[in-house]
Length: 242
Image (cartoon, rainbow, N blue to C red; front, side, top):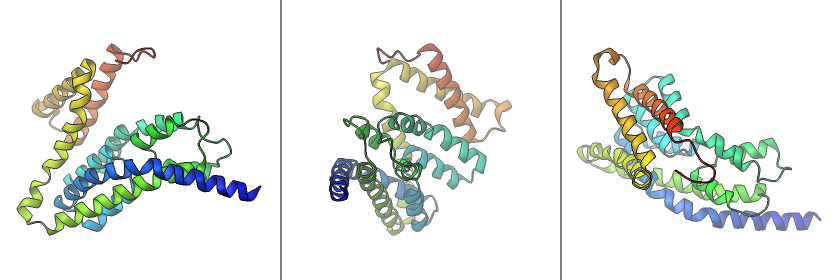
């Protein structure tokens, strides 16, 4: 009985590891960009690697680190990353319906660290219950890929001339543009919501009465208002995507 369980766990782990490897390789180029941005912004290479090792949040990590570099306050950083990363709560709730009920809370917290857009997508389409061994195998590759890519980017950035290293900061904005353009081209509501958020940000920045609002909170306010408008005008139809 115990031997069969060990063999089953080993098989699930290897299968999860196999499923997670494409995600790991896909993370490396993006993580390299993060490493470049973080070090060129003034963080040490070791700190950049630690951030990636202790976080796995992609856009939230970029935004949070950018605010740190700008010297933003704790509340501003917390609110920004919370809004960007709140989707992981919904993903985890959804995935909890598929995992083995016998998995303990401690085990759930361990592999919950590795829930990202990509690992969630892979795990959610699997048939049957998801074991603890499978989930651990699934997240290990992405965690290593994200951390390794950051280390490579941080090392490269620290070796670049200062002028070229500072210019790498543009990669952050290029990444966000690359994130929003594809869905905006496919969905009119998404395109309009993006325009609304941009307009709100511009108004908050250039109208003098709002001058006391920092750049980070401008993003938070614009995100919440635009998302609320989008949800009110284009509510999700379970039978048809927007």
